[in-house]
Image 1 (cartoon, rainbow, N blue to C red):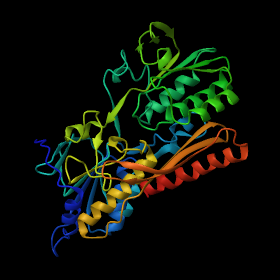
Image 2 (cartoon, rainbow, N blue to C red; image 1 turned 90 degrees about the horizontal axis):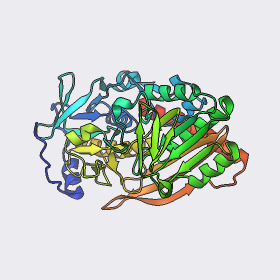
Image 3 (cartoon, rainbow, N blue to C red; image 1 turned 45 degrees about the horizontal axis):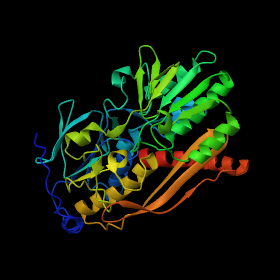
Image 4 (cartoon, one colour; image 1 turned 180 degrees about the vertical axis):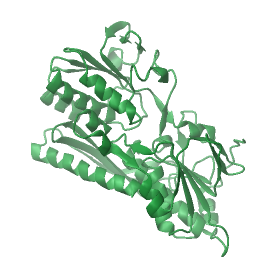
Length: 421
């Protein structure tokens, strides 16, 4: 398997060549392979298949048969949703859009022969490849913790059984026990996510175990929607939540899963539940394909979502270096629509319009107390740059917060339909 890093010819030349690449009459359909069936990959697969009306052969490689969304998984932990409601199948992508859905692990990309190999021993040839692998964890980023400890100290940053485990651990805490979160350093999936999770854990403990305490060990000086979360915690969960930031040892932390101990700058705390969210990087297949930079994420061309390493590969979502855009399901869905349009233009000669991106992240603090942050973005030569933005304000009235929460429910229904049909 050759992992050479071919030179990129520049966006204008690549698009010019792509638009002339209309298949000849009688020629086999061009092939697109998509690795990863989350908010980026599933959306891209559906849009390419739908908009090309069968002119492109689309294969989606995703190991899981039911995809559980990380977004809204915190609401399951908090008791606001049931587990089935965050799970989605790929049946409609296959039956309604003719997508070849392959449930297997992609384990190799040969960029010279343009093939993707899977753990099951199959090889899939492509004309264009889309990589949407989500995140993996940086080994050793939390001393004492590795993936073998995930059942003792769950990360729950990939939704599914880990989410169920963390919920069960929280609900099973002893009276007056301690829940500890080791928060991740930037950049990471869903910047408000750890703090929404704290809110949801606090919501459960207030009802079931009101004398319990919550400890956040955080290497960051500040975090997304901080004023909104801290206002909400004081209002709904006074005295329950303590955050230790970098000034007080949040950057010097280690754990012992066997003894359930957390060492914070030399001070050892015994805890009942420990949610370790490690530092993150692009999913491993991106590195195997030679698409990552030194920070573990994938450089992309902002106008097209093409890899900087290979003009025939597009990278979406959490795996990318996306400038001002945060890593979120909404962002991945937005990336996917741009990439789908570019791929379709390259393979069929259809029109590719200028890229525009958007993102909104909603968070629930307590019952009907929803907040949000978002922005619109446009590509520059160097990055995806923020154009304008908005954020909920402290002191908002209860009716507005309830409306914000209800808006998030509508968005979830809409984006999952956009992803899975």
